[in-house]
Amino acid sequence: MILAGVFLCFLELTGAQEVDKNQTTLVTPEYILPCYKSDPEINKCLRNTFNHLRPYLKTGISDIEVPSIDPLKINTLIMENGRGPLRVKASFYNITTTGASNYSIGQIKTDLDKYIIELGVVLPRIEIRGKYDVNGNVLLFPVRSKGDFWAIFLDVDGAAKIHGKEYKNEEGVRFMRIDKLFIDFKLKRSRFRIRDVINHGNLLGEAMNQFLNNNSEEIIREMKPAATASIARHFKGFLNAAFVKLPLQLWLPDA
Image 1: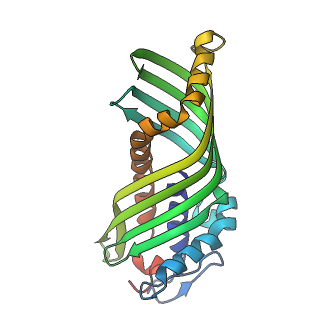
Image 2: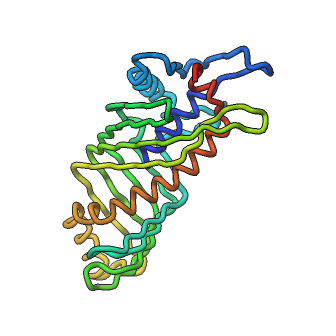
Image 3: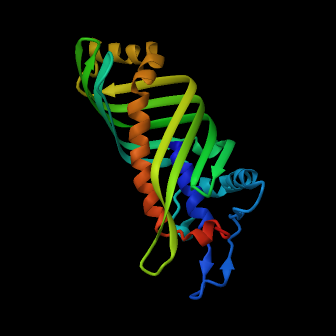
């Protein structure tokens, strides 16, 4: 979710240029380092742009309605895993994530003729808090749990791949719309804690905390397909809502 949020902010910022009615005058704000499709070092340029954005993304930019990514707030994410020993539907809401502004950009690869953008992001530490509601089965045992959750992820390696398509509005202005968004991640360490309001204060509630931490790698592996799909669905809609404000000329001037 952090990776997609960072990418959204980048796209909004690279499009934040003022254009007169004839679209002949461009004014570039201080937080933008423009990149050009014809640049043979376009991937290096985009990487520099991401790094330049870091302090602005941390505080947010009110004039273009880009909120702070630290903390990053998400209303709802729903994940459903129907295969394997962990078959659950998990709803997470009122989510607050901290640590995203400490990102560093890894490799960037683009094919801008096809509107394909791939990028990697490294995050040293991500802390997530919120509320959850889980129904399902762990192994052969039914599970019903609801309450507050807290999680820490260390040394997160994230990746995103965007497949875009060009379209024109009624005025003939060209835009890019996201057709497909793929997200992946891996991490070295994690720690979980829940406060189960259904089972809180009894042996089952504490046993669930122990199970989460003793089996965190297996749980993440089982839930990863559902998690990445849910995050991608959420941010695909979010990104496309932003793209309607971003003519190609603004964030890719020579496209």
